Length: 319
Image (cartoon, rainbow, N blue to C red):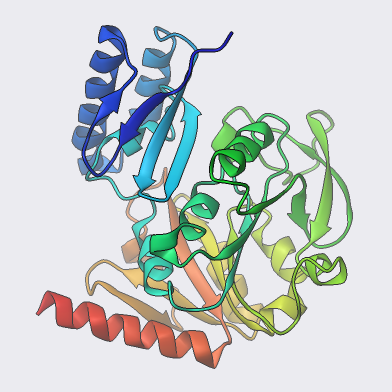
């Protein structure tokens, strides 16, 4: 019989249900995150995964806020940074999600992994939004479904990949956070593929709503955009990942040159979401080759006004 999950409250720092070695490991995982944060967490995942091999197989349930619990295998290299209470996962996304609590939007969480963002945006502090978490991996999906269950099944889960149209593909990779259908693999898990616009066809969403569309689809972002033209015409924002090692800025270049969307990036030097027409800004922002950087694309006057207002609020807070 599986042990119940360890409980960790990010607000208070309370760790419950852990034995002495598991407590020691929590301190190591948290301290390692704090130290490695000074160099973009380089090496953290590998070290955490080594430590994980010394731990009994069980989950940890992290209380993200009073209405959001996120569960994952204890010692997981990717998610254990959450044990560092000062760590903010993808802070530019959290900035937008937190500011949009009062907007009636739906999150399309493509490449949801274990469902972190679906858990968070469907919680009360973030506005109790509808979310559809889409994840193709047979390894990841049960963990995603578990996070939906422990949060009252308040968001929907779909087991499929996102591409330019309906079909099937081979999913491969060695890291749960980086499984991909990109390329022409002959092995790997066969998974169904849908286009973003198929969500309209299938009655999951309407063609008139407001959407935040997180595309964390590991190299298939452009194909996903090609299959989401109708959704991109709604009041929507695409939240895409630019890989730090991609000095051609492929995703942002496609947004600028082949879509009607405005390209928006978070500039740490100004602490603002900047609308940009020159890709050279990404040469300066993308300082680490082993991490991803989020860029936004939208043609929505509504969301552009919200982002401008968010910048004004941020400016007032920093004065």
